[in-house]
Image (cartoon, rainbow, N blue to C red; front, top):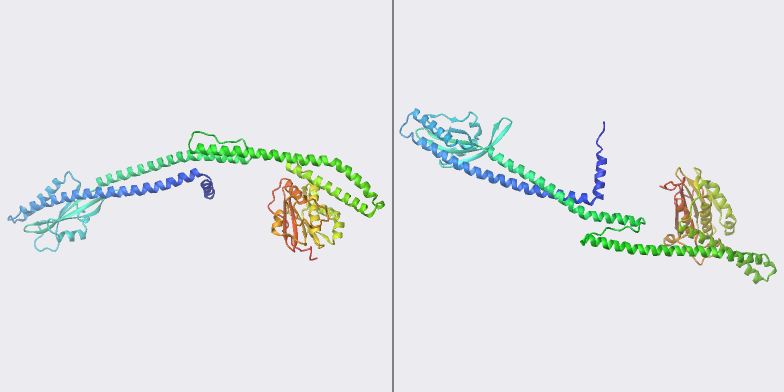
Length: 531
């Protein structure tokens, strides 16, 4: 059996409400229109019903007053006759006259009742259209009529039972006097079903008219809002395409209204942005080409300089001390220049989008051990102890080992330079979907402002500080690009006086999506500094 999924329906309705301006506008307009039409329609229906009832009641009260006069005249004819037969005949005659005068009206029942509490003979007896007519007259109405002047009429709303329901009615009572017999009460019951039918027709007409008006308002609102929202939707879609790089997209311009003015302004803005973007893209390509060309062109003279420097460096023992020192400085700076050119070429390839990753299954623990071993002598010269903490897990991942090793060597070089001779710990951990490396030092640390710029090109936290590794200021920028190329994260934590920690998190497989890192930032010191 298939059940109605109301939660899914509610989610779709809420999503439509949030995303569709047309839906919100039409819905709010319909709700407010329904409220307004309902209030106005209810007021009109109540007013028509009250006026219809008041007019009908006034008509019936006049008619009842005439009927009371007819009955009283018939009763007055019995004066002086004194016989019971004549009295009963007068009552019957009055009853017949009232029926005849009411033949073309809505009178349905008549009752002539003797006022209780009188002495003397009860002549004539109570008469009525039906035996149930007396039951329609309440005791409160009878009490008021019995104590009223003979010229007054009183009314009360009642319901006349019928098959399948009841009809609204009004009972009008008045007091009459029968000579030689006493006080009697005349009650006329008027059926108001015809008035109720008229009121029902008016109410149904108002209801249908209100519904038609609401639908008409909704349709007009939908058309108007669609005319306004349509161009806005086109503008939004065009803006999305422009943001996606389709710079030739424009909004159609039609007419001279406000929407057309908006379209022309938007298109003018798009033209200006396209020119600026094309100009900046051209400038960027020129800069990239310039850096690449210069880097390539410098390789040949640099190779010659390096060879000449190597010759001088090899013969430095035969030179005077000042010349020998110059040969050593020349060799060191040429090597640094070569590294800088290599980094510039790498950055130019990243800027041009010409870098592709060549992955293969790699054991990260072995890669970390190799990288640590390659910088062990440098760390020893600075007095820093290198430690590797690998608690175990899924350490093999699909990565490009050369780029991950370059990231790790850059992080280790920075840790050695800023570690103040304190231990440096390399953490390796993983889970089923990701692998992570973290390099933690306990040196000088960085301020929050420095952490925000640590991955910027050519930026250094302390330019005056002597670097052991001879970096170019591009190492962390290239490392960040290498991490992004793998779909990974390169993050930093640092605090002044507490050291720094760089964490690299990579998906285990190519194309994997990272949802978290197996290592905390910074990792716990268990198995690390406290050992």
